[in-house]
Image 1 (cartoon, helix red, strand yellow):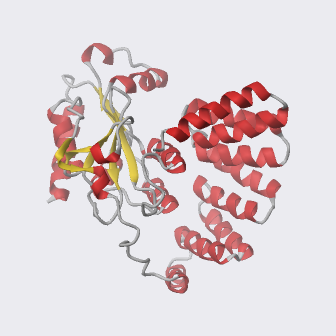
Image 2: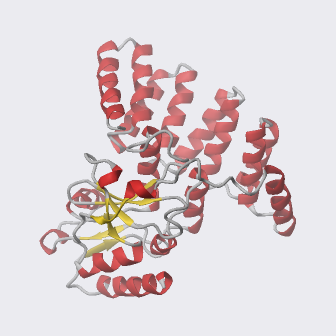
Length: 358
């Protein structure tokens, strides 16, 4: 049912995009690899219907007719996102999810991993609309209003799934009501209980066996090599882990995520200079990824290249002004540089962001 529904709504969106009466700005399709890498990186699943949307439009929005004519450049586009109900791209979802996950925003520590709140839409008031990952949500999470001043126990359901939300969105010409119905359900009730969460059924031995067969059938299966690298990394076999991710990179040398994994493995082995090279390649491929910027900053800091570390921290904060890790790293850099007042200012920001967790 959902599959048919999303197909219908995507067809409606295509028709509205081609009609001058409806000012819209939607991006070109996201790549399947980027979506898959995001899910693998964080061990979560986006709703199938939203993935289908991303495979046609990697984010976008409707605009007010009087504003649409002013959107001529990328900077204009970025500015007008704040005046719309904006559906996020996979890159923007990753940046925001990483930040929320790091601070465990609005989620208690005892809540089951992985971090369950997946942002996918911003509203005119700079609030978030989110999915909740987990067994209770299933493959098609409801859409919830995640108001930053409210706890998940009050985030009401706006739509039962993304396909229904897209229908509401299109009916409202891109400006739907974004306050959920608490009577229909709230996000807090969709968080998985860690005591009830099922154990992962595939053991590391089974993963190695399965991926060995996959590689035998397709020697260019880069994702299978990535999976093997993670098994060896978890076992503490860093040499084998690095060899596996290196094979994945040989097959797909444009995949920033693989360079990030390589950097993590090398850093775990105290090969900081080598990890810096890997993180640098990840940043060059995806310069707006704040996690990659912070990892490179951390490597610079360990190598006492504090000015370089500061540049990356500043860039991460510029991209996401509430990125906790960036402030924590920059605080350390400022202290190393003797900039005590700036370090103190960052510590105040860190305390402020930490206070928002509860």
